[in-house]
Image 1 (cartoon, rainbow, N blue to C red):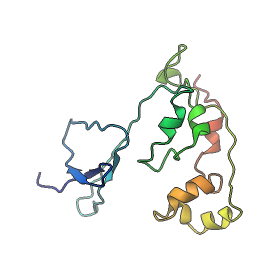
Image 2: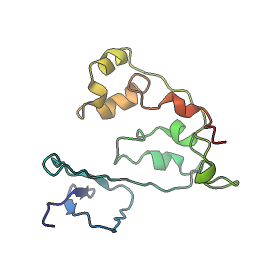
Image 3: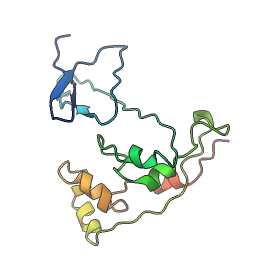
Image 4: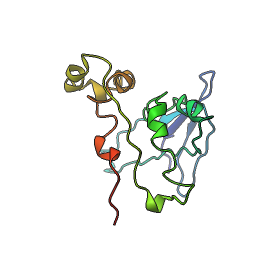
Length: 156
């Protein structure tokens, strides 16, 4: 349709590549590839672009650290092994499936910076310049891990 590319990827040397979304087409990229959507003002067309990044891995003691060291997206927070451990077994294995997902396991999290509440109230948790670091330092004040997801979901 003549539109500009909508997705950008970068290799480890910083070389950029652009991709134009096509109907009924998926894009698969390997690990350690920085990626994201290219900004576009959809107001004139009154349209929208919806993108989903899906990460697939079986979480084990041996790979959980490597999985959480991947840093191409804002969430889950890079290096947060506790969060990933809380996801174990939700979707497959031991008779589990997406159809029977009961939610993540409980894990404790708290702010590590005494200034977090003020920074969050100032809107910095949603500011592109500060969000990455504040998600790590201020998970409670920035509501990174919604506490509603700590409880099993009643799907009966």
